[in-house]
Image (cartoon, rainbow, N blue to C red; front, side, top):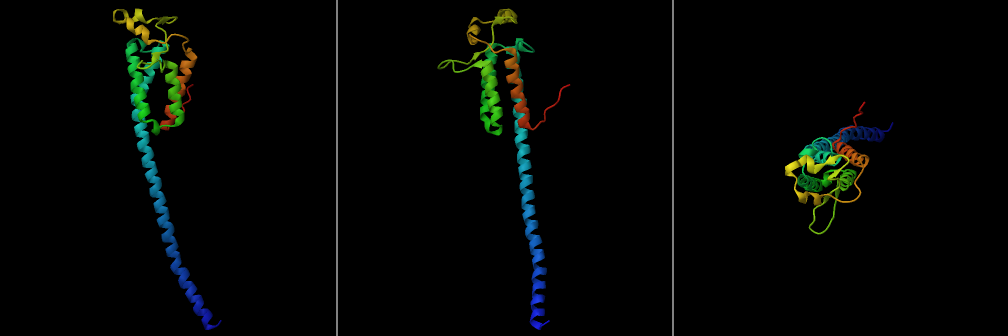
Length: 191
């Protein structure tokens, strides 16, 4: 082999030998950046989930009180019509403030539930109306509240067709399923 070939071969060996650490350093740096990016994304997701859990702790009891009031179950006797309007305002504010931390399907499920429980946009300056009965097949709220029932509360209820128990329960469960999904909890099979 001519001397020039030997020299070229030695140069090639040196270049390959020098490039291996450079390539390893390049890929090592790239991998390190990627791992930091993944770590940052996981930290951010944990923080968002923590915020969502705080919102869940705040909002879910209010949603449950609205549901119970309209279904005439649970603690409905402890919730006045005035409380219902307050609960709606509080949950509307929280959900709308944090809307962009949740999925669009959660927001849609929230609105579907709220519009099942309340008739909204009832007139300029008017509160939403509760889509439940003052009295009916489940009893009479005026009797349950006895001396504390105020006649003006009758006007806080929406006249007309009420949501069925199935519709109300479906909208509530759909909403809670979306809430759970946004928090990252898997569906629990109830046996």
